[in-house]
Length: 71
Image (cartoon, rainbow, N blue to C red; front, side):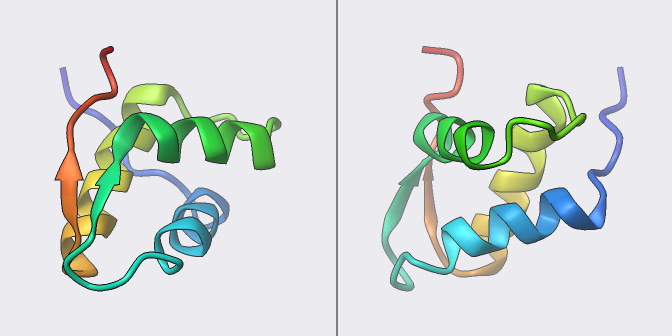
């Protein structure tokens, strides 16, 4: 199964949350996903799509990722 890319609105929401972390920090995928869903409940992207985009964005920002989304 191939996960589709998220749109610009989802990317903006992810960036807004991840940009609060300092380079080298560890971010929780689960907490970031919950924060995004709470802040923007109307997003149509699936959780799988958002998780992939969160991980990609976090790595691009030099953040460590706690892969706890399935917990």
